[in-house]
Image (tube, rainbow, N blue to C red; front, side, top):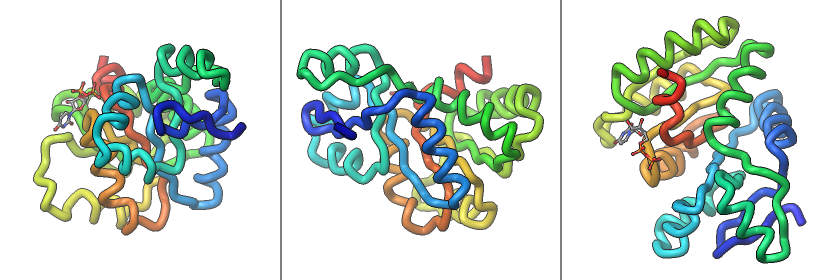
Length: 194
Ligand code: UDP
């Protein structure tokens, strides 16, 4: 099947490289997408909280982030091929983005972390255009960040606000954007910052 259901969460049946290719097609066609890379913690949270489950169901794609999800899928008799984690997917998308000169926006983490992440991305992926970067501690009632994204039209928006804030932020604002692949990436900026 195209999807594997685990406790009500619909996981895309895909390898990471197929998924990254698929996301490239969204970018080429300027088609919006909302990606959740769901680990077991996310599955349990969604199973327990209807509000969070509803957020997950607004995603265009949910991928299996973690060996626990792969094991659960196997036990249910509907195996998934491999993990598609937020961090690995982000790195793959940066590689592709460097080849294709994509525009990206980074949202999340502490200011010093995002500053270092920007420096490292510029160094490792020099053809990527970082159209904006904002720390993850902002006023949710302010229009500043969504307005900036709307105007700069990045191909990719990495949202590292932790769970469930990143899913909530994407679901809240997605409607107003014309394009962009939005993906929640948890603590990935901290890893990229080194
Ligand atoms: N974070 C943020 N805004 C917040 C809370 C957290 O930008 O209001 C950032 C935090 O600095 C870290 C990332 O979100 O870079 C992931 O945080 P955490 O490890 O708590 O999230 P989880 O592991 O649950 O995804």
